[in-house]
Length: 479
Image (cartoon, rainbow, N blue to C red; front, side, top):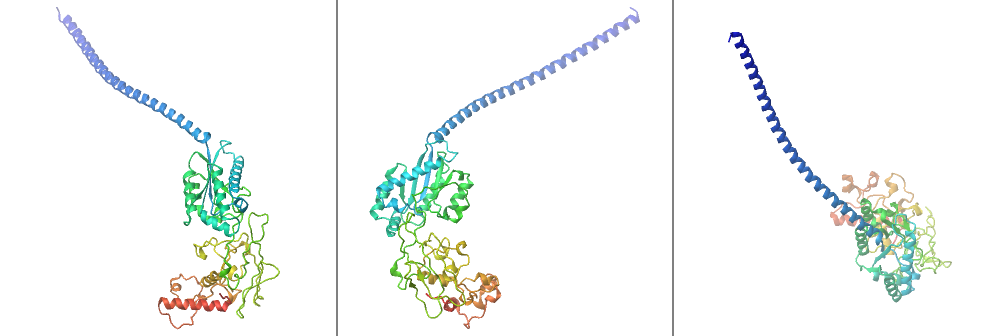
């Protein structure tokens, strides 16, 4: 074998060795790749299994949720469509039944329930958001039965027996109609009615709530709460008195008026004539009611003429012979002659549990002690009937407050006869003036007092009272 042939064999051997090495590398790479793919496949299979289980669980949850939704919708329809309720809550202390109904006794109570039921049903037909034409009416009236009995009997609207028979007839007229006695506690009816409004209005069974408490500003907080909760659209105002409390006029809520059921005017305070040895307070008529007219209860139509009294001689009011409801006064003062004023209709009555300045609305200082230029536009009360003792306290308290005309730096037309204070009763020694807190804010309102020196709180109070009494006597106001 020559060298050339040997070299050829060597080259072929090297070629086969290279091919074998490449084949081994290819096999090795293939095996490694196959192992990686198998591991990846196992991981993917595990993930698929997990997702299958999650999908199966989700399908089960969705199916359960759909069944729950169907069940709730079925229950919701049964609540709103099957047996809806219309709730009617009435403050009986401020919505008093008409004398014609009360005096009819048992028959009047049944008739009152019938009128309320019929009136509410007729009003419901005018509303577009009622799901059914035949809802059930659940009516509750909260009141102090004994107090109302005394009130209506004292005004001769009925006897106690007729009143009790009326309550019995009303309660027996319908299963869901009732008058609840809350007792004589202060604001007991208000508290129960407010809580009933707050709790029951949110119930889905309650489609409408008729609220009969428009005479009292105290319900504003409860109505604001319902407005915040988005429930005010369920409310309907049930009118009793013609006049609505001032703060409740801001709500744009539908109103329902049922004629002939409730009194449309507040009953005036019935005064005890024995308390007035010198006659009734000036500018107020004798509170004897006129005969019945078209209104459901006795009312006043006095036309009193008011003139401030002269400092001297003292004046005693006398009754006019031309009209049993007119008071004649002394000739007017030469300095000014106030026009005749008439108490607004309906007359206002005092809450005996509150002082005069906390009444709603508070009595007008200028109306009772001088002359009110605002007339019927005045935001203070002109319709109260005050006793001489109350007028005396009213004068004394009014003199302690600065005159609003003088506070503006203008001359008061009444001068020393003004019913309010023109100078600070503490004089130059007013500690509130130094602190910038005195109500008599103008410098000329602080002058030297006739007393030489102040000695303690007791002496200070005596001096203030002395100044006030002196101002009263100078202004011509006497108790």
